[in-house]
Each structure stands twice: as C-alpha cells, then as structure tokens.
Image (cartoon, rainbow, N blue to C red; front, side, top):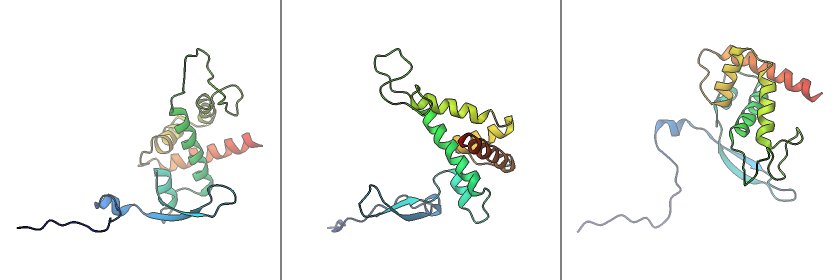
Length: 162
C-alpha cells in the first residue's frame, strides 16, 4: 500500500517559484508603528512600482528629488482614482473628511492638485509622468522626457511650499 506524505511542521509559503518571483528582491526594515513601542521587523518587496525600479537599479535613471516628486504624483494619482464614499447626500462633500484645500473631500482635493501639477508640464512630459508614475508602465524610450517632467514637478511643488 502506498504511503501518503504528511508534513508534521507547517512550511512557510515562499510564493511562486518562477523566474519573476526570484527576480523580486525582498528587504527587511525596522518600523516603529506607534510612539513608545519597540521597532518591528517588516519584510517587503524592494521594487513595488516602476519608479522604485528606476531609482534602485545600479545605474539609477532618476535622482532622489525626481523620485520624491514621482512618489508624490503616484500618491495623488492613487487617491484621485478612488471612489468618493457617498451615503444619501447630494452635497459634494461627505462626512468630516476634508483635504487641505478646505471644503473638498480628499479625492476632489487630489484631482485639483493633480490638475495644477499637470498644468506645469508639456504634453509629452505629462504623458510620460502619467504612464510611469500613475499607470505603472515601463518607460521605454521616454526616460529623458520622464526625468524632465519629474524635475518640473519637483520645482512646482517646491515653489508651492514656499
């Protein structure tokens, strides 16, 4: 009679064994979640988006200021793509969620800030920034255009801060 294999200890799930899974680099960071608590080790994939790939590769295609501008654009793009929660109300704002613009909800605020930021870019730069930072597409042949667009966004946001 054939004997069935039964594992006595649970093995951790290491994910898919294919080449794409082996190409992802996993790093450990120490994160403090709340004040006065010990730091906890957290494992994450180093390159979560195309911006991370461009920044963390050996011959980095973008500098730290461009990377920060791209991450800020990505965060705004993600927030703007979310649906606004609406519960039996015809008003444009819902609940107590208000963005820095005053009476707008966070989604509307993100759309307004994205429109202001995109107004300082040329058409080619805005296409490259939206494709790479917003839609997470590979840059292809538009790396130079992407870098120029991220430089323009960095300058725009530095001026807006001061």
